[in-house]
Image (tube, rainbow, N blue to C red):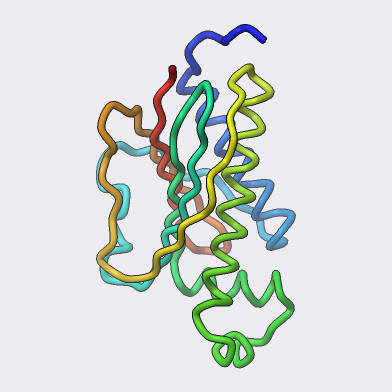
Length: 168
C-alpha cells in the first residue's frame, strides 16, 4: 500500500469527533458534542478536581499518543452504566474498577481513531493503555509532534482529547 499524503488537521478533527461520539453513544448511552478545538488552556477547569488521564499510543506510518482527560464524577457514572453497578458497589470495588473503565473508554476511543487512520492509508497498531488518577495533572507537549486538543461535552462533563503525533 502506498503511503498517503500528510494527514490534514480536518481529518484529525473528523476522526477524533467520530471516535468520541461512537464510544459515548455505544458504551455509555450518552451523546457527546464537540465543543471546541484549543491550543492553550487545554486543562482549564481540571486542575483542582480529581480526574483521570487515559492514554494509548499508536505506531506505524504515523506515531503518536492520545490522552483522554476525564473528570472523576463522569468516570463514576460511566462505571455504573458500563458495569451495571450502583454507586455503593463502585465505591466498595475501589479504584481498580474505575481504572478499568477509563482504560476501556480510552482503548475504544483511540482504536476508533486508529481504524480511521488505517482506512485512510496510515496503517498503525495500538499500545497498551496507561491510566493515571489525580488532581493538578496535565500533559506536556512531546518533542517533534503536532498537537491537537479537542474538548467535548458528555452528560454535562467536559472531556479533553489531546492528540500528539508525527508522521514518517
